[in-house]
Image (tube, rainbow, N blue to C red; front, side, top):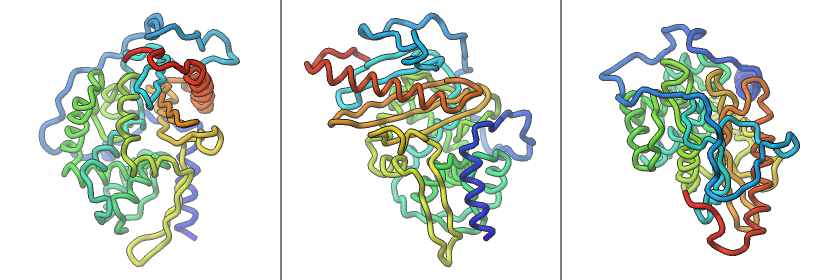
Length: 332
């Protein structure tokens, strides 16, 4: 009963709309202990959103009416099948992106390989996850789980305990892991992105981990090319039965597009007070795959990010299908 109630509570808490995360609310003892030099990187600049730049080609102003609007400070939509830009708003303005950061965490782990590797849950991982409740997978210290199972705990309930355990294992040490995240960002051409931690939570500050809509779509495209990642983020929920090596776990995906939007296939939600409600998303229809992101949809209404994504996807699929001819979409 303890296992069932704990896992269900963790899943429900991860989906709570009213979660509030601030660095000041977390005791200093909850932060990972420093080891070695801090990761270097440019100081973040989070300017006030400018007047939305023109999209790469003529596109309707989806924010012009509430019925078809996109509630977001920044957003972008691309045709991942062709790589063409379909629509954007403030796509190169830097914003904190909260737990969308975990997409990069997963990418680094998957690229390292051996997802059957067994990893023992530490007390430090449990304590870190509890400090940032509700963003935890509810891992039990002493349990032996595979890297693949921990990725499911990372990406579905947005488990910061799973993020901590993967980062400290694959670094080795979380600082070394964060350096790998930043190196991967450079490789992907994410030129206005910096990671200060492995999960996007607000430490050292709300704004030390940041990216842009354009950069995050590049990250989404790279991650969705990996079969293991695609399989994990497409799940609405995941159950792991108990064995002699671990307790049982049940995780629900925080991405409510799954099961509600036809063709939705991923990928990750995010929220902190600084970032607002965010969503990196993907859907496919008639051999067309679209990937997009909405950043800072609102700081008070979690469902608006899903409405914004739905409006963008509906417009995007209709637009791509109506164009027909190759070469009509914009460049990136």
